[in-house]
Length: 264
Ligand SMILES: C[S@@+](CC[C@H](N)C(=O)[O-])C[C@H]1O[C@@H](n2cnc3c(N)ncnc32)[C@H](O)[C@@H]1O
Image (cartoon, rainbow, N blue to C red; front, side, top):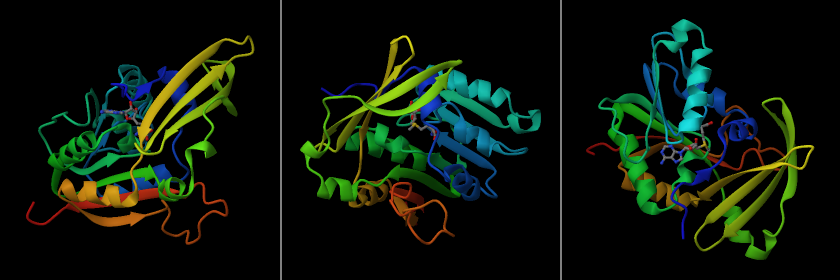
């Protein structure tokens, strides 16, 4: 049975750990250069919205989780007044939200598309992104690239019986060890991750994220079904960095810009 909500995660704990991918904010700032209006679908705690807010620019963030949205509101309030002015945040579902206007850029950053657990949900979100494009606008998104992992790994390679130490984070002044456990369902392309935050007294808080990854041909097909033509699909944020990192990890991405197909 698929969970109805792909994330069950206390917002401050999510925000302490999920800080984006190296280079992504610079990338979205570049992508939005010259854009007077930007919509972010799945804006979380406002990481990207606040980076893109600028005097004279309309920036709208849509987020389904009210706790994360409240954090985003706080982050926006901390911006200089001239940057805040054009920003609005709205609780909603990226598959169905209707803002009754078009945007020069519609963004789904940092794997937001993988929170959609069926083809129908992916199609609904991309179709809605297209519905919110102003003439000449672009959709931009990034997701992790799972093609090689999916092709070369077997379910036994991803043990799911124990939480493994990941890192330490501080949440509201308390230090936590973070442990991670992933459950991989290869045929359904699902990787569901549980993060356990344990403080020095052994008290634990859990956050879970359900994800369904897409292989590159599936992502291309979904974009095409939505009536989008790919302008660029790369494996990195920084076009000036020609080589992959030696371990490949930071660059295991699909970074996409797409525009409405002519005639659609
Ligand atoms: C991986 S996070 C990315 C957050 C943010 N874009 C960033 O880059 O920091 C995905 C976000 O999408 C939100 N989300 C998932 N499904 C959603 C949906 N159907 N509609 C709106 N938001 C959704 C999640 O709550 C989460 O905040």
